[in-house]
Each structure stands twice: as structure tokens, then as C-alpha cells.
Length: 597
Ligand SMILES: *[C@@H]1O[C@H](CO)[C@@H](O)[C@H](O)[C@H]1NC(C)=O
Ligand SMILES: *[C@@H]1O[C@H](CO)[C@@H](O)[C@H](O)[C@H]1NC(C)=O
Ligand SMILES: *[C@@H]1O[C@H](CO)[C@@H](O)[C@H](O)[C@H]1NC(C)=O
Ligand SMILES: *[C@@H]1O[C@H](CO)[C@@H](O)[C@H](O)[C@H]1NC(C)=O
Ligand SMILES: *[C@@H]1O[C@H](CO)[C@@H](O)[C@H](O)[C@H]1NC(C)=O
Ligand SMILES: *[C@@H]1O[C@H](CO)[C@@H](O)[C@H](O)[C@H]1NC(C)=O
Ligand SMILES: *[C@@H]1O[C@H](CO)[C@@H](O)[C@H](O)[C@H]1NC(C)=O
Ligand SMILES: *[C@@H]1O[C@H](CO)[C@@H](O)[C@H](O)[C@H]1NC(C)=O
Ligand SMILES: *[C@@H]1O[C@H](CO)[C@@H](O)[C@H](O)[C@H]1NC(C)=O
Ligand SMILES: *[C@@H]1O[C@H](CO)[C@@H](O)[C@H](O)[C@H]1NC(C)=O
Ligand SMILES: *[C@@H]1O[C@H](CO)[C@@H](O)[C@H](O)[C@H]1NC(C)=O
Ligand SMILES: [Cu+2]
Image (tube, rainbow, N blue to C red; front, side, top):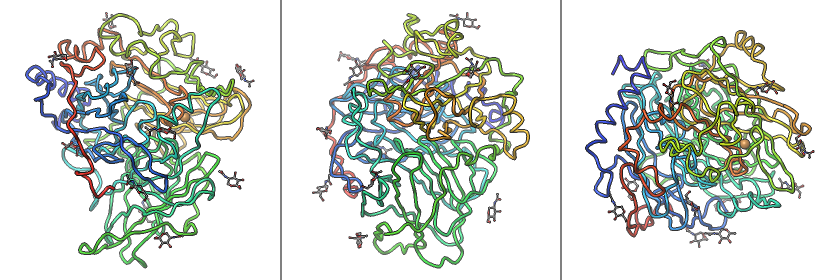
């Protein structure tokens, strides 16, 4: 394996071969034993002072259970949609599905959604070199508000930095209304907007104030237990639906960033973090040798939206293991003053951590770039119906007649994009509403923010499936490739491979269609498949802020997964090599997880 680690492509091929051999002998029917099972239900819960309402649950909780996987291995994860009235999919956020393109969990793009009372077997073949912090979540509608959970990929050998322990800090949003009602309102003409998040949760709990203090919640907080004089790896997951959070820990102002979106970085000190929807960071926290008190506040504040939500958790030193877990409530006045939005947060500062095992500097140079595409985003507000246009068109998960990947396999041409049409429209084929890309191309993908019809600007965390891109930074106005090269040359940082980075609003207002700010990525196209690129704010996705890249032609895509294995994927209700309905067991999660009530 050692040799393979230097050649990610080779190791991906090896994983593919192992999987192909394996699939011949395994039938994924009711007798199949997967490596992990996730069961999705809906249920009523009280969260953070919000009156009891229906949310989605994974194995009875939100967030769902942690999945811990090892790089270089293949896992089959069976996801049961135990709901009776909703489709579902599961996406493995940040992991490449290069060798299992039907397992990316994107309805309309990589798979038919899982019908009610059906299961789907997802194949996760994890290349060596991607150990880091990830999460799983639904890709249907607004389900990911609550149908989500942490996913950690651990090293086959050992991480490049030493730490004594690790803690997950999983952020989520809570809304006043259930997700179907919220989504219906967003799709309505005129729009019915039920408000931003009521509270931000840390590991399922949160309390504090929102709407600039107009709403207060005095509920119990999450507790992060630590010991004195140790080093912890804090793994932050931006599992929020909309909120962009600024974050700091009282009395601990040297957080050393070591990971961004599954890529190790050289150590970089920061006193606070900004974390957008879909982003992950790991920091090393050096706990105090002689703390002055037992509890230090962890304070979060939302940014970039009209009302501020302030939420808390507690860093708790040396909790005695023999006494019951203490309960903590939010402070009456904020102990910390967090900075306003920093549009330059970590920009042009981070450097990939290069070691024998991790992240080589294989970034294509500017001279190798073969094509540039724009994703120019614009919010149309005509008739008070909100639509996010990308190069003139929105994308919704129910737009394609059949999922693009299914269409590629059937070779029926229904959703196959035309390069000729795309070239005339900034890279997007307006008929199939997809961006075609050829294997071997080196693309620069330029996200361009514009003033909306009404002039408002929004900040968008843009996420790419399929492969991580080299993040080229961001700036005001229009992207200028030469000026940006020069900026990198004089910056301490080097581009890092990321999967979710911020397209800032930079300004609060810009007149209609003004090109106000940009973000750019560079990517060598190597993985045939259908990969979504979208804003990770779930509410914006419902407004159409999603795009799809179709990489490779049908021959190349068909080369990825052997034909007999795909039959099951081609119809709604299928899974790998079989149909996939199940008779639901009577699953009473209250019996399994009483402590969560
Ligand atoms: C989820 O719950 C099922 C039982 O319904 C159990 O078999 C499975 O191990 C659980 N998954 C995880 C990751 O804990
Ligand atoms: C929600 O809170 C109310 C009031 O405390 C309580 O009656 C109800 O049982 C709780 N619901 C759940 C699902 O725990
Ligand atoms: C579920 O997905 C199928 C296939 O895309 C679609 O026809 C159906 O309307 C969806 N059902 C619901 C409840 O959204
Ligand atoms: C969702 O919320 C709406 C509005 O509050 C309510 O009418 C509907 O019954 C709720 N749906 C479920 C499944 O609880
Ligand atoms: C909070 O209340 C004040 C006074 O009523 C109001 O002006 C302000 O808009 C409210 N803020 C939010 C975010 O609702
Ligand atoms: C919050 O609730 C706790 C427990 O009931 C109580 O001790 C505390 O005083 C409350 N805080 C505020 C600000 O009301
Ligand atoms: C970060 O700050 C701490 C404390 O000031 C220092 O010990 C450490 O060397 C710094 N790390 C880096 C990478 O600069
Ligand atoms: C991308 O947008 C910029 C700014 O409007 C424009 O100059 C450039 O030609 C566009 N590129 C493509 C491929 O359309
Ligand atoms: C904004 O510009 C677009 C494209 O030029 C146009 O279609 C739209 O009507 C304009 N909106 C307003 C409010 O003027
Ligand atoms: C796909 O591209 C490859 C490489 O250029 C070529 O050999 C193959 O014929 C193409 N297949 C189709 C269906 O166009
Ligand atoms: C698929 O479903 C059909 C209809 O329910 C059933 O007759 C058939 O046995 C199933 N096939 C497999 C492989 O489970
Ligand atoms: Cu957005």
C-alpha cells in the first residue's frame, strides 16, 4: 500500500478492482450484511426552546451516529428510508465517489431517490490520503437540516500531527417550522419566508439569543470535556442549513488549524474560526496547564444575515468521572467579543501539509489551464418568487427526466450535455442544464456573485462533489487570473484542496447584476461521473442554486462500474444489483436511545 499512496489514481484503481471482484459474489438482498446501517425516520422532538415539531432522525437522533471509516477500505452502508411519505438520499459530504458514482447520493444527478420503505446500499471506497473530517446528510429538499451526522475518515497508519484526544463539534441549525413546510414556503409565489435559524446547535444542543436578542432560549448546553495540559484535535463540522458562524473559545486564543475539508494543512494559528455550511476544519487546542476555572465558554455568532444568533457550549476541565454530567445554561451577557465577518479569513494563508503520505503538490499550473467556465449567480425576485440563476438557469432536483448518470448508462441521451451549446453560455449547456467536461481538461471554475434584482447580496458557501479542487482564493469585482497568480506569488499561503469555500457578498448592496465578487477553483478532470457543484445553503438550493457537471462521455463513465452491477440503479426503487424494498420492522427508537429524550 505504501507505494500506492504516492499515486492516488493507482490506489483508486486498486480499490476499484477489489470492488469489482467482490461484487461478483455478493447479492445485495435482504440477507446481505452491510458494514454499517443507517435508518432514517421522522419523529417529534423539542430542540432549543422550539416547540415540539417533526424533524428527521438518523437512528433515532439528530445529529445521527458518528461513522468512523479507515482510508484505503471499501464499505457498504445500507441506508433504510423508514419514512412512509418522503423520498430520501444520503450524501457523503467531501468524499470522492470516483469508483462508485451511483453512491454520491444526489437525486436527479447520480441516483433515483430512495422511495419510502426502501433501502439503498451505498458503496464508499475511500482512497488513501483523504483522512479527515466529513459528514453525511440527505440531499433531498431541506431534509439535511436534521438528517445528518458526523463521518470521520481515519488514517491507515497515523495522522501527521500528534494529539492526545479528539472532540467533534458538529454545528446544526434549528428552525421554528418543519422542513417540508419551510420548503413549500420558499417555493411559493409570493414567497412565504419563515425566518432564518432560531438557534445554532453544537452536538445537538444550543441556547442563547437570536434575532439580535429578541428571542432568548435558556436551555442546556453541550459540554466538551477536556483535561489540563493536553492537546486535542477539535473537528468542526459546518452541518448548518443556512448559518455562517464565527466561533471562539474563552481563554484559548491560539487555535492551530491543521485540516480544511479533509486536507491537512501546515499549522496556522487563529484566535477564532468562521465556518460556513458544508465546511470542516480541524484545530489543535492546547488546553491550559493550570486553568483558572473549570468552565470556559464556547461562543458562536452568526454572520452575514440581518439578525444575529448567539449560541454557546462549554469547555469543561477535568470533569470527575464518578459524578453525573453537570448541566450548563447560557450566560446572560456574552463573555466574548467576536470580530465582524472577515472576508479574508484564512485566505491566501493556508498551505497544504506535504508528507510522504498526504497531499502532494500536484496542482496544475496556470499555463496548463485549458478552459475557464463561469458560474455567474443571480437572485431573481420577480413576482416575489425567489429563483437563483446560474448562467441564467436554476437547477432543481426534479428538473431532469431521469438522473444524469442513469441517462449516461442507458445512453439514451436524455440528459447528456452538449459542449457546443455550453461554450456559448459560459460553460453551461442550457438544454440539459449541465456543465460538460472532458477527461484530461484543466478547468478553472469561476464563481461570480452579482447584485440581485433588489440589489441585496448574499454570502454563499460553494461545494463541489466528485473531487476536491485547488482553491484559488476570492476577491472583489471580476476574476483576473493574472492578478490572482501575482497575489499568490506574494502571499504566505499556497492553494489547498478544498470542497467548500466561500463566495462572499463583500458588500451588502450592489445594483442589479453588478459583478461584485468572485471565488475561483482549479481542477484537472480525471473522474468520469456526474458531480454536483452547488451552494451549500439548503434554502438557496431550494431556490435553484445548484449545478451539475457531467465529466467524461458515456464510454468513460461505463468503464467505471461494470454493467451487471448497475442494472439495479437504473430504476426508481432499485439498489445495486437488486430491488430494494423492505418490510419495515417496527423500530421504536425511543427504546434504543432513551437518553436523547
Ligand atoms: C443504526 O441502527 C441500527 C439498528 O436499527 C444498527 O444496526 C446500526 O448499527 C446503527 N448504526 C450506527 C452507525 O450506529
Ligand atoms: C417536549 O416538551 C414538552 C414540554 O416539556 C413535553 O411535554 C414533551 O413530552 C416533549 N416532547 C418530546 C418528544 O420529548
Ligand atoms: C419520489 O421520487 C420519484 C422519482 O423521482 C418521484 O416520481 C416522486 O414524485 C417522488 N415522491 C415524492 C413524495 O417526492
Ligand atoms: C409541518 O408544519 C406545518 C405548519 O406548522 C403543519 O401544518 C404540518 O402539519 C407539519 N407537518 C408535520 C408532518 O408535522
Ligand atoms: C428585534 O426587535 C427590534 C425592536 O422591535 C426590531 O427593530 C428588530 O428588527 C428585531 N430584529 C430582528 C432580527 O428581528
Ligand atoms: C436558566 O435556567 C436555569 C435552570 O433552570 C436557571 O438556573 C438559570 O437561572 C436560568 N437563566 C436565566 C438567565 O434565566
Ligand atoms: C500558535 O500560538 C502558540 C501560542 O502563542 C505558539 O506556541 C505556537 O507555536 C503557534 N503556532 C504556530 C504554527 O505559529
Ligand atoms: C466569464 O465572465 C467574465 C466576466 O464577465 C467574462 O469576461 C468571461 O468571458 C466569461 N467567461 C466565459 C467562459 O464565458
Ligand atoms: C435585473 O437585470 C436582469 C437582467 O438584465 C433583468 O432581467 C431584471 O429584470 C432586472 N431586474 C430589475 C429589478 O430591474
Ligand atoms: C469518449 O472519449 C474517448 C476518448 O476521447 C473516445 O475514445 C470514445 O470513443 C468516446 N466515446 C463516445 C461515446 O463518444
Ligand atoms: C423484486 O421485487 C419483485 C416484486 O416485489 C419480487 O417479485 C422479486 O422477487 C424481487 N427480486 C429480488 C431480487 O428481490
Ligand atoms: Cu447560497
